[in-house]
Image (cartoon, rainbow, N blue to C red; front, side, top):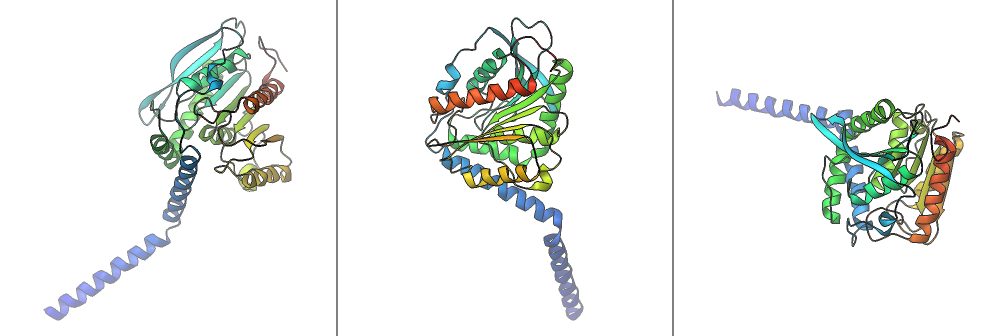
Length: 305
């Protein structure tokens, strides 16, 4: 009996080892581990960049809109069986449907600073939906912001479902004839991801120092004009990665503009935080609004391009 028990035990250990080896060789498991590692690295880089920062509105968020706007908090999506509320804003003198913008917040979440910037963008002649990828949560300090960002990066399918419904909302409910995306930092990466989700439908994308890929296979389907605004002294989004992204777009003959601002760091134009640089932020705003006018339409009432 003891010998038979020993044999059975040995066989069980061998089978468990085989199952463990098969699990270790499972491409899905490896892919998930890689993605989780990349998400953590990305979040940790942002933690270092914002080490002494806070989620309070920056100087850019107190610049008033150029004209009066109307803002509402509206449910625009349902994700993971929860309604998602965003900041929906448009010019008060709007007569006809205007081009639309999906605005994606930075790693602090959809806070007052982002809402203020959405108001400024609406005053330029757009209907704007500032989305919420953090489920109503915002952060005031870097560790909390890291946790919110990491949670979103670890479940990108939820963010994608969120942004897909945001696009449909601004197209169908807002009636926007043309639609663009814009975001800062974490939101800059997701502004580009929105374009990758809608490679033929979106009309423009503005990336403020977001994480960008250099994978030509991933970028190949993209038919959306891109404006990338980056910082020379950004350690979280190093210039080398920006140049690799730029080269990939060049190789693929995409429609893009890349501007790297000298002597400024990450978050130089953020609606929240203490890294705001007025001169660089003003210039970036000029480039962004000019780019949006070119690809989405003129300031004021909607007109056909």
